[in-house]
Image 1 (tube, one colour):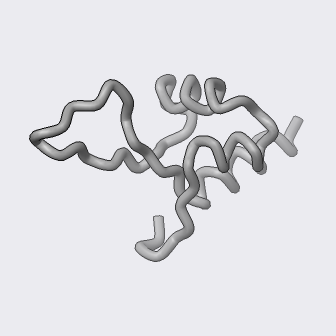
Image 2 (cartoon, rainbow, N blue to C red):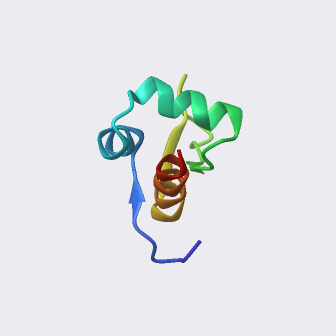
Length: 68
């Protein structure tokens, strides 16, 4: 992963790949897509994880889809 690589939100990746945001999150939970999880502040506890998905992961998913 390049240090200046473009990062996408879950919603942006879902639009690029044509899947729902829930499917993208499911793939993250299963380890199929590897995101960068943004750490939470110590004072604030959220129920959700803030994450960004690198361009290289999106491209890998596109290559995988084209195989079929």
